[in-house]
Amino acid sequence: MDTNVQSFAVANLRRRPVVVETAIFVAGFDPSTTSPFINYATPVPGAEPTGRDVSALIEAFRERGLKPRLEFAPDTAPTVEPALRAAGFSVEEVHEYLVCTPATLAMPRAVDGSVPGPLVEIPSTDKDYTSIDGALSEAFSGEFASSPEGAARLRRLQEAGGAVRFVRADDGTCAGAASCSAPAVGTTELAGVGTRPAHRRRGIAAAVTASVTEAMFAQGARSVWLEFSGDGSRRIYESLGYQPRGTRLYMALES
Image (cartoon, rainbow, N blue to C red; front, side, top):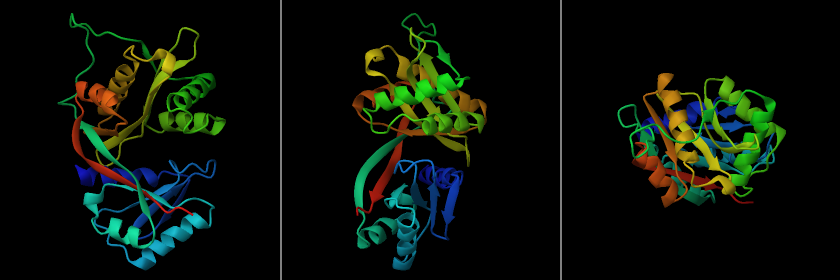
């Protein structure tokens, strides 16, 4: 599964507005933001970078005023981490990822077996996308700021074959949401699962995760993968049929 996940990471970065590609690395940039979570690079599976390859990658970031940063499944290119460390990169995080397939997906159900929970919707208006972007910013404690560009990225994702799903709060705003990129190489990443603090413990995260996953299988994806932020979220994902399959490494070069 590592190779599929890494091949998807390469394909997904090639969808960025600006792509810098070599035989070893693919870097994707979005000029509308300086966020390191959007502007980053990844190696192609089997990459064996030289010091010159890494220097060229660093320059691609430096000339744009961005922090050099990579996300990748290390088992698919074992020599990448040592090459990056030799150039001064350090590990930001190591994340385990979980994978769901059509055979393992388990939709949330109530004790009586009925399909329970909040109503999941597909956003349709600018107001919906703005509210979702704001809710996710709040859900992730302001790790990224809500912005018109963020709302526009969510709309593009939905319109480009991905999926954005949300649960509407009583006041009409977004209570929680999830998104998924369009499939590539038979798989796709589910990301941005977040619930505003005031609306947690109501089954929203499970509902939007299951809805997005089901939507991707309906579009032909053979698997969906995600990373989790803690034991609580892991339990939710595993209850829906997500199972541990590997790890992803985040590395950056601090200025």
